[in-house]
Length: 245
Length: 240
Image 1 (spheres, rainbow over the protein chains, first blue to last red):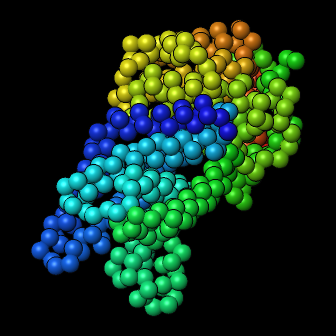
Image 2: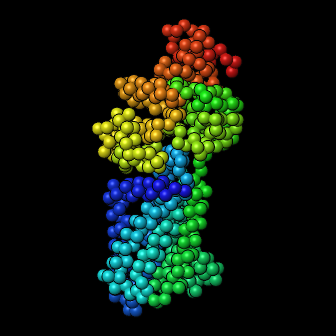
Image 3: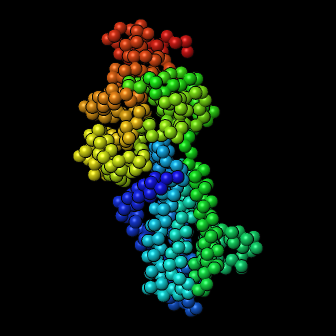
């Protein structure tokens, strides 16, 4: 492990993003537009349903966007030869992974600050807990998305395949996280599965923050998300082979 | 020590197929060694073995007295794959600066290497907008960072303008003159004459190993013949 190399990787990833204005705009503006759309959809309904689905959405965006961005960028590193070059240099695999996690964590912080600012400031999403903690959950969520995306990129031969992993790994988590049907109302098997999925923990954390000012449960959920992210990074590290066939 | 690389009984298996069949060779310091052979004969695999990124390797491969791929060797080898292996969406200088930071090299080293491949005027251009030849020179510049003592270059001159090719070959010889071991692969036989020493390869074995003049003599040809004729003569004479 070397902080010099980790920072070099993070700086380089950010420099690449800085040059890609369109991707950057999509990452920051798109979640805001979708949250606005959702708020508009529910506007005329009674019982403030936006307060129920809004938090789940705030948990979902960083996860999905970072999953896609990371799986495609790492795949490009693998197929373009830059990963092989880096592994032939004095670079540790964890330097590479943490560099990516750091860069995308930063982008996620900006992304969620924009989304949270919009939801709380303009769209009147009521939040009982501290707003900064909402952003922390979003960053943990983004790192989780990055970790899974990185792992998945090892099994994709093309960018096309990498994108196809999204429905396989992400959509079941969205369906079972409690957004559509509250988890206790699901059939027992699905409830059990839903309870252990990482996105459910992230959504729970966000929901707690909107309903109560106690933060104990939030930290517990956050620990689950962080644990999954660490496991994802470890699996990702295992797929970065210095020697390949 | 006069050899940068010493290899004995090198065999490589990829999938179920053996692609290199028991090679023995050395690569001397201070010379330009050419690895020549048709596409698919195993040149790139051999180079990957020396750099330590190839799996399925048997036999002894030592680089500067240590097993290939050792951590301590990673500062001492410059490697360019057939793809330029640089970031298309960054500028030339940004690419070099990034790899220099990974290697822990100074800023000045970035400018030196950009100048060495004659890309000073393009330093601030994004790599994606450069021509193919310029792009592969960016890859070469990265390999020169930190003045490695062994350069492993996989087809660095393919598709380049003849004037530039000439320039690169003189650079390889200048580097060799400072004691660097330079290994250059090519499938273009007319580059053979530019090497101090040749390893002629076909289907995972060496047909010949020596200076261009020695190889022609072994093939039973005179000095004004070219290496392509020598290659053919040796292939026709061999039992398979």
